[in-house]
Length: 422
Image 1: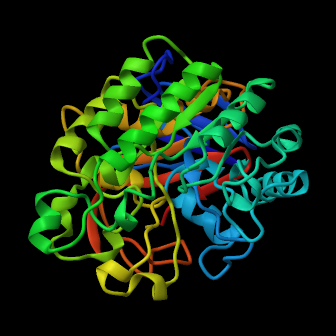
Image 2: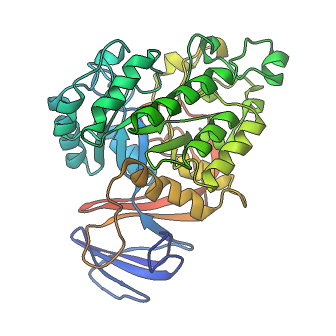
Image 3: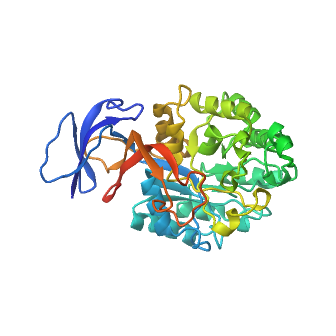
């Protein structure tokens, strides 16, 4: 099967085709030709008014669902959501039933992704059963293909445990992903402590809950000289701490949820439970600092923070609703709809394509003749509506249902697996 992508502008920093308008011919999963104009009567055309293309996007921190939470997300629905959102690769969280903490589970996830056309790069559990008490079998999981280790969005309280984990993974140049949040200070992560929480009469979560753990983690990384990823930071102070630390090490990276770049606690005045996420939305000062951190490379990647939940967990009064929102299908469009001089199209695409791979020290795909096709095709100007009927995820916990967004995925290519949008 041949596909011909017509008149697309390449966005791929470092490539000779960056910002150039070309045609791309994909033949049986391989890029067979890139040129200014290509004709092939046997090829299926992929075309549009303002097509752009980049290497396939990668998401770090996707929550799976299956096994154990099949009512939230199955492997099939997750792969469909990923493709519709422009993602060819997912770095997945270990939260499932049981937790991902064995060689067999790691291999099974990798094989499942290959069968569905989306490459799954599993993160294994940092602690046994994600309980934060004892270290999981990190070496065995690494041998099976785990790309890193984490307890997800649950912060490890025991400093000694995190220290030992960093020391363990150093022997094979592995990486620990850790979300900074002191649960004893965060007041259940209800809402950011500030003017908005006071006006709404809700007990707030102080920035200090994140800042203290960020500082601790950075010092542990400095002590062990091991690889650490500060996954989904949300405060100005965390950005400052990480920026300073990165001046003396290349083993510290960080990521941010797209929602924290385009939303703040001001958006919670209507008590939309689908904006109750973790990390919580902080104030405008934090938001501004996070955006600056993205542009100056203090923050290495942007995550969709895809967290599917059943309706019973979200259709509750704000204080009682669970944290989380699906994001794979809307991450790019939501960011693109809010892009500005400090967060332009090139930066957005870089932070969801090249940035995640560099953070995980994975090979960055290329756009050139003869290579495996790993391509995301999109139109940044196309407007569309994200409706209940268009959602590919099994869950519907999104603040963007019925929203009009700018920036549409046209197609994704991952070798012979091809998705073309309606």
